[in-house]
Image 1 (cartoon, rainbow, N blue to C red):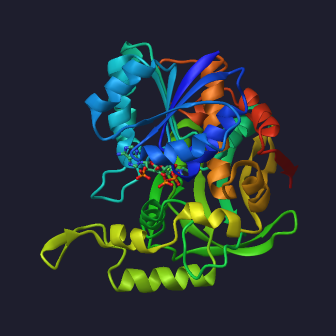
Image 2 (image 1 turned 60 degrees about the vertical axis):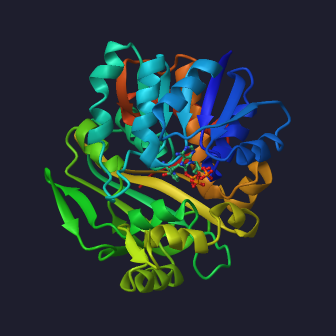
Length: 392
Ligand code: NDP
């Protein structure tokens, strides 16, 4: 029996709230807070049990502290935007409450995915006897747990890791992003980076691709090499990794639109003076694009996210593929959101459940691969993201 405070009532917040509400034996009380309280109320109205809703500006630490003191949660589950991570961590430290998020901190004025800002909280969380769990979504999140699972049950040493994220869904729109457009475009247009023999190798954005044959009828798709935040913690925590890469599929229409938007400056994140005021082009673009939440009823098809891992067990080489396939329409029927929000919200709920039930315990700041994968992997099968593994 415990109380969770969820911050952020966007696409992922909606899924997390539904999934927490489905497990009353763990989440006996739920508060959902966001910048726009009406969004929390709209989600609350979809549920079959009552929750509390509140308005909060998560960039305002005193406001957050007041909310946490009033609600007295056992855990703060942050599914607002990466810009809020450090403020929410500060408020958790001040009020003595455990913390969880799904994406690493990013400064607003620089598209830079690094754990250094959050890892710097290690000593402060330890001193207070608190736990912060970072990146409990799908990627990062489940992909980190797949690595821990492979290390526990299949390998003595993992040598090559390819995380391959395929969205084979179609929403019928010429150009739209499946989650927050600003975060998505900042991520996709950043330079690529992968780990090779002890160092990072940089590539131009989306300049390196391969074709992968996905299971369960999805078939062959072109995947592009990108930098993704879980690589940073995985190369630190999984000893012996010689190569680690992250790949994502994109359709031709998405890539063509993105190229044009970049070429005309619409993806810039610095302010531009326009008719006497400063506007940030990517924020203006976000206002024009379809709200990712509106894509739920339109999206058909599946996602497939998995880890292709090569390693050694008892002196023999082994290749293992662990993956999940999630259906957009089934996700929408269950929680009113498409599979991108679903595959992030379910692991966020499971991470919170691990912490609140004491299956995952610790003091300090943790990435997912540092904890026992078994209870988390078992919970994925129960709560909507079943996994399969194939020895190749
Ligand atoms: P949305 O933009 O749909 O939702 C974000 C929510 O946060 C909005 O409701 C917004 O409120 C709220 N918010 C923003 N700023 C503040 C603030 N200062 N104070 C309070 N609330 C605020 O994003 P998503 O739901 O798609 O994504 C949520 C998080 O999940 C992001 O950090 C994203 O990076 C992460 N993510 C992680 C993935 C993974 O696999 N690990 C995959 C996909 C997403 P309002 O609407 O009122 O502005």
